[in-house]
Image 1 (cartoon, rainbow, N blue to C red):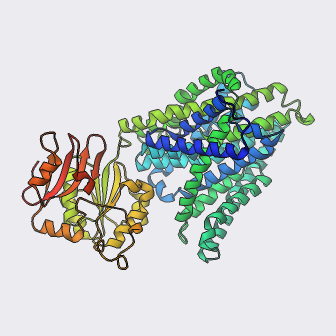
Image 2: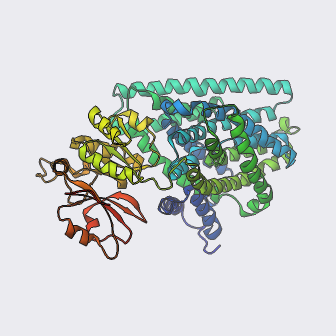
Image 3: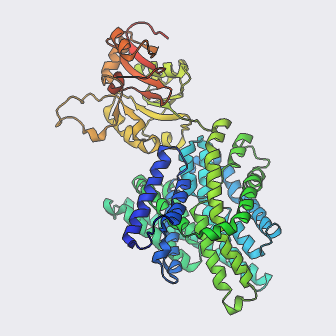
Length: 621
């Protein structure tokens, strides 16, 4: 330990881990690194270097009474948020693979992992089976950041997302059933107990969830909840549903909140997008705190003792269990090709649910070993094996996140299931000048997609070989069903300034505000009493900030696209001198790739940058 921070106040402790969590998230974004890996590293580092550990503030059994319930509720909120992202429209292509992975794939993974625990590590079947059920999970805490990092195709992304969210409650429920069987006296009692528990879990987890979701939908539809209470009201209902379900059947709350999220996401009466956006922010905060807190609780000596078994299990999970479950689940299926299966077999990171459920059942087995009626079933040796599961699972989490986090993106690019650095352009509007620009970019190999409600514009784009669809940029179809593989930025270029602004706001959560652009509005230079607020607009396109009519007028006069390579001998200033009326449209630099140009780019561009400009005269290359 470099410095002893064990005496800092609890408020300071919370401040430190919050700061570390957000720093880890920012660093992961800045350096394109899996965020979960950095969070775990920060948590372990804070423990080893500064003794920043929540156990310093937990006395006696507060860990069980306070920390684990908080972790459980946090996981419930994360799974509910994940459920809110699951749209049935995504299952048109990926439905069959998702069902196979969440049924056959789960069974194969459970059986294989349990067999490894029994026959290779000589664990008691109770411990091996509980671990086998826990390790079938992946989870939104690790899958969502990786999908954001990898940017896979729509089909593969939907399969991974659905599997990651749905198998979490499945794994937790399986662990409950295994525990029930492990503490039953005989096979007949075990079978009866398991069947009753399963029936109760499904009844509560599905029926209770649907009823609550419909009540929420009705309250929102009737405007019985004010807007400012929507998010906190939903959070409170999720917490109540989670706690109430767990009171009836242990760990059934995770299924309840997941089903609630899915039902609310797929109803059409009211919009829950604003709630989802709030929950996404909450999820980032929760993940940042939980991973640092839980990783900081793991004793380094326990990690070292568990390392040999954990590393061997890690290798078996990556090289044997996951590929076996993926290819076994998709055997004789035509819904996925070999490349997609190979990628899915190379993506199964474990996250916070695995850590939380392991901690819960390690305590459950330890407690059961002290109860007289279970002493013959749960021996001290079994309890010790269960305690060893916690450091083993943390090593599995670190190992799988590191391996899959570093491998998945390059593999997806290699297999053609993702773009290494998607800088393609989505055009909202397929008018004449937008088609001229899109044609030049498309001919140079850049991904483009044009959307327009005008049939003639779409037909004209298609006749010119430009990918185009007749669709409203603000429709649910565009956001939920179009595949944006290779697309990384939006150009709102319709003749309607209000539609452009709305589209820019609508797609911020997909592309990010830095890659959302719109053509300069017609009222940009109007008095502030008549102009739309700048807060309602995104970044303005092109040098000189021409509006729709300016660009339309230039193309009607015969303006063409001129592509020029900037060198040390021919600078951007030289180009503008030779083409005084040119409008700089796009820049393709060796470091940042393709992006729309702005007035700031007129000052200096580096050697090797290619520019696209709208100039009078013939197109030159």
